[in-house]
Image 1 (spheres, rainbow, N blue to C red):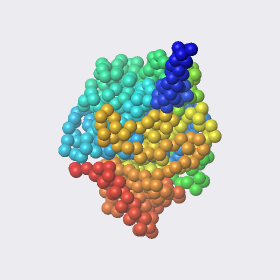
Image 2: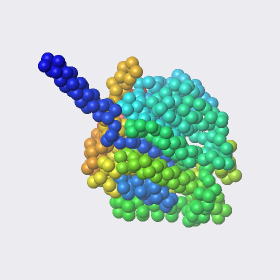
Image 3: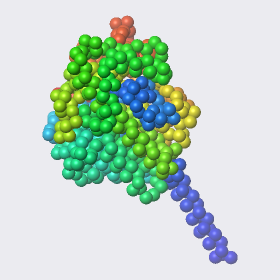
Image 4: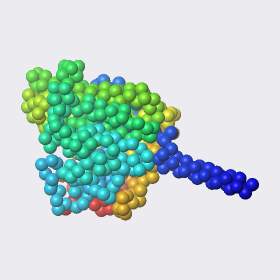
Amino acid sequence: MRDTFLILMILFIASCNNQGQKSKNETSGSGNQNRPNIVLIMVDDMGYSDIGCYGGEIPTPNIDGLAENGLRFTQFYNTARCCPTRASLMTGLHPHQTGIGHMTNPPPKPHRYDGWEEAYQGYLNRNCVTIAEVLKESGYHTYMTGKWHLGYHDESRWPMQRGFEKYYGCIPGACSYFWPHGDRGLTFMNEQLPPPDSTKYYTTDAFTDYAIRFIDEQEDENPFFLYLAYNAPHWPLHAKDEDIEKFVGKYMHGWDEVRRNRLKKQIELGLFGEDMTLSERDKRVRPWDEVEQKQKELVDYRMAVYAAQVFSVDYNIGKLVDKLKAEGKYDNTLILFLSDNGGCAEMYDEFGSKPQSWINIATYGGAVSYGIGWANASNTPFYEYKVHVNEGGISTPLIAHWPNSIKEQTGKINHQPAYLIDIAPTLYEIAGAEYPKTYHSNENIHQLEGISLTQRFERGNGEVHEYMFWEHQNNSAIRKGNWKALKDVDAKEWELYNMATDRIESKNVAAEHPELVNELNDKWYEWAKAKQVLPKK
């Protein structure tokens, strides 16, 4: 009798332990049946209005499908430039907190930021943790393909040393689409690869194919986090001939008409109200009817190549979506789609930079671009471009698609403001992951300040920031409610705009609200001091 009692007690204790372990696993990572997969897709230098569901004429049916069956945001913001945006996206922090307050150290300049503040060291520091590091600790598989741009000159700065278990792509940043090579070549895991066959290779295809491969290779049922960071449509103008052919001649009506047509479509889609107008055409760009016929043909071709780059991103996203559906993972996968900054006017030539003959030269990875005129159209209806903290530089599409959870908001448009530091806390909440106070013995991990977007996924409106802050290359901005103050690198005084009535930033009302301007000035400098925003040099 006593032996029977002891056996029953042992079984009871074991059962309690198993139940406790099960409960722990369901929140800490091993109980993965209901936790969603996460696919985070970032495009590079794509303007606000380029894709169909944000007003564009470029066919993007796969991205549009995500929007139609998901949730779109009209006031989501990035940080105006490639690597600071990636730093903020990957960590949930302001870029200065991560060590990338300006840019990363490029391949030929490993000591570019020597002597600067830590906030400008040019690679991710160890006072931040990446989404991959947090989710990996929580039981997620972590995959990345594409453009890293968060540290190059030491292997400790690479993706697999920052939480990703598999990686394929270009670590330093911009590269040739057809023939990544040299110090802007390809890396698989931690191995630098020889250049590919330029007659068969295209980065947008390869980054997608490796993303699908990583999903294929997974042998268990744990959820995965996939960060797919396309280098498209960043310069150089590189696209496949068959894709370019679809667009040649389609832009002969010019940038003025493209802007008008896009704004009309944006209003019809409900992105903006009937009273929205276009920002003025960039003063460096002439009216289309004043452009010579031969020049029109040349810039039509440049825009055709750019459109082909965006088009290629879309059908590659379609391949990935088809894979998720085939694997039965589509409904419980959160897909987020956004751009790292506004459309790019570099190198600030009206008709595009570098000779026309350099377009699609596989060996060249430099700034063959589509010019100010088309960048102006890409950012319809906003003013300014990448680098600047005007709406044209920091506004991005954001699409959230998750059939299992985004239900009441399916097909709707959210007009509340949010920005990059909100992505990480959103993902941690839906993944049941705990953000660490310390990480691998580092007790100085910066804590998150973002706001989860899950309330907006579920019911539309959610908590918003009292203040939002930006700084890049001495271009500064702060937003409180509908009021946005900004000051570019050459300005001595803050400008003030009402985002409820003037998102094109055409009516500076700073003189009418001096007390508000003073408040925003004080708050911005308070933030700047706390985040080590102002560099020594």
